[in-house]
Amino acid sequence: MQASTNYIQNLIRDYPDFPKQGILFRDITPIFRDVKSFNLISDFFYEKFGNIQIDYIAGIEARGFILATLLGLKFNRGVIMIRKAGKLPGRTLKQDYSIEYGTAVMEMQADSFKKGDKILVADDLLATGGTAEAAAKLIEELGGLVAGFGMIVELSSLGGGNLLQSKGYSVHSMVTY
Image (cartoon, rainbow, N blue to C red):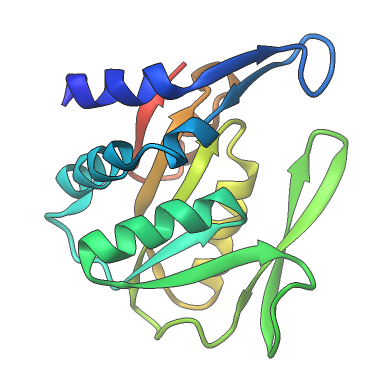
C-alpha cells in the first residue's frame, strides 16, 4: 500500500506561488494521464471502504467526478454529482459553504438517492473541509448517510480531515501533506 501511495505522490507536481504569491499548488493532473494510477487509486479506496455498504459514490465538482466515476466502476455503484449552484436541472437542494474570500453554494438533485442510502463522497483534494462538509449536509438533508470521504490529497495543516473526523465521519486520503 505504501508503494502505491509513493507512486501517486511522485506524480503530483508542486507549483510555488500559484495561483498567487505564497501558495504552493499541488497539481494532480499528471495522475489522470497515468493509467497505472487509476488502478492504484481504486485499489487503495476499495481496501479502505470495500467492507462497508455503499449505495452510491458522490463526486464533488469537478475533479471529484473523475474519482467518483473510477470508484463507481470499482465498487459497481452509480455516481451522484455534487455541483456548483445553477449547473443541475430539476429540483435541487442547495448548501452554502465558506471559501477563501466569502461563500459559495453547492447543490445536488433532490432525487439522487433514497432515504437511508449510504453515500461515499469522493474528491481530489481536502483542505479546510468546507466543501466536503457542505456535501455531507446535502446528503444528510436528503436522508442519506455519509459512508465516508475518499480524497486523493489532503493538506493536513488546513484541518479539513480533523474537522470531518470531529463530526464522526471516516476520512481516508491517499497522499497527505
